[in-house]
Amino acid sequence: MYMSRIPFSPITINWTLTFRCNFNCRHCYSRPEKAPELPTGQVKEIMAKVAKYKVPFINYGGGEPLLRSDLFDLTGYATGLGFNVSMNTNGFLMTEEKAALARESGFRTVGISIDSTKAELHDDFRNTKGSHKKAVSAAKFLKEQGVRLTISSVICRVNHMEFEELVRQARDLGAEQISLHNYKCAGMGFTNKDELDLTPEEWKEFYLKAIALREKVTDIRISMDDPITATIHKAPEQAIVKGSTCGKLSLNIRANGDVTPCGFIPVVIGNLLKDDLKDLWDNSNILEKMRNKKPKEKCLTCKHYEDCLGGCTARAYATTGDFNSPDPHCWVAK
Amino acid sequence: MRNIRRNPDIIWREEEEARAEVVRAMERGDDASGEGTVLLVESGMMHQLNLLGGEIWKLLDGIDEERLVDTLAMTFDVDRDILARDIRDFLADLDRRGWLVHE
Ligand code: SF4
Ligand code: SF4
Image (cartoon, helix red, strand yellow):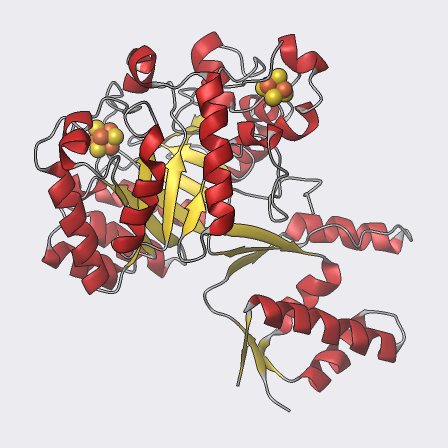
């Protein structure tokens, strides 16, 4: 069942509480980003405004959320407003005490980023020695506290051949889900794309194998949220919108309250200190363009367009400056 | 008869605007049974319920099947036996998915 209209407000807000980070990963979209950080009171003010529109999920993205000293205070406030809160962390700063605070403040899930099963490779990719070991301990601390765990891995040249081991590692750590994120050519991801991104053919090969594994595995969920896969398998029954989900099911808030359609599309549509979420959601012409993409170039004659809608809008925009361009990961011939 | 509740692990929300539109369509006599009015998120997956499903779902706060049929019979202008059967089928489907708790 597809929705003939988009939900009345976002289902998920991805929220960058800070752009600061203790790491400097080679694929990171947010390293070049700078924005002043809102103090606790203003973040809470925005949370209260967003809660009015019954947004069910907030996910803190990176920068590193654990660098905010008010993280658990904010989370307690958000869960009190009815949000289901999760975060993505590199895990380096997670301790037993913080894992206990994660539980007490009401985190629904915590996601740890691990990009390889080989410690040296992960440490090298994330430019921080000891980071794999710390990520593994972070997972253990969270599990001991009974916090639901997910693992995130950004698929790229260093790990695309070992995703089965990544899945195994996540399962051994007790994660209920592993997200195999597609590589985004934004921020450092753009600078390093020639070295790290796969070719379209390699993406196809990866997805064919990963989708086959997902159908086989029952003890951990494998999540791959990439619209370009519409070309190789039928969207699952529960997919309610086609193409990219940003601007249709989710929005992104930056450290200073600016709103962008997604973390990888640096186009500001408003700021929640002064603007109303519902007004932006209903009336932004940037969102309107993303929701009503027009095929161009090879998409014009492609039989998958109805399901694929040109693939990932963020990648198209990052590489060509046009939402409507075909996804650069697309493997369909001209 | 046992009371039925929604599985608390499932996050859900009524889509108020979509529901209002479905109600308007039905008043015009159009078939809108394929339109979602309630969104559910379960284990990272998103699902939708149509108007009847959504109205049943909202009532599952610890209610038995008999009372559920009585309540919905006041809103839906259909034969009570047909309504009762639709509700039973729907509940069986939710049960299979693990979305209900029986008390
Ligand atoms: S990917 Fe995450 S951990 Fe790595 S530098 Fe970026 S924000 Fe920090
Ligand atoms: S040509 Fe366009 S519509 Fe077709 S698969 Fe590629 S990106 Fe999708």
